[in-house]
Length: 118
View 1 (cartoon, rainbow, N blue to C red):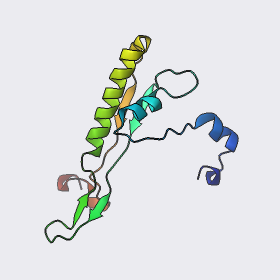
View 2 (view 1 turned 90 degrees about the vertical axis):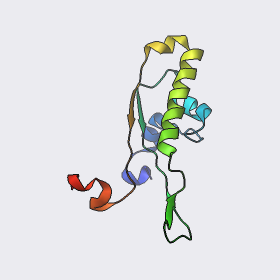
View 3 (view 1 turned 60 degrees about the vertical axis):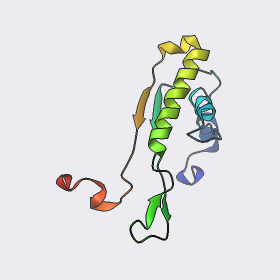
View 4 (view 1 turned 90 degrees about the horizontal axis):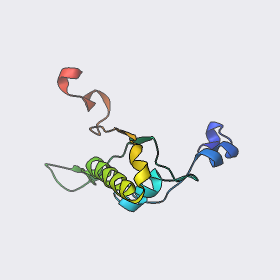
């Protein structure tokens, strides 16, 4: 996908680290926050996860989210991971990354915001 955008393999290899795991897995989050050759804590954290719709046979609620609490769980995992990192690497306590959490109601179009904001 990045190659199709005109980003060279050299740039991708030098700047992209893929960490396998799940945002609700604190160990995977720790690997992500401390990844890289220097093993130092990142300076910025951007969390933009979301649930996906699941269809079900119901007249009152035909669509539900597969995990409606994923943003909450992701933020909890990040905070727990930071606590464990600070316990394991006391020198990292001086680094306080900025955390940005991006979320949505999951609705497209003008109904994505309350009626008064439309």
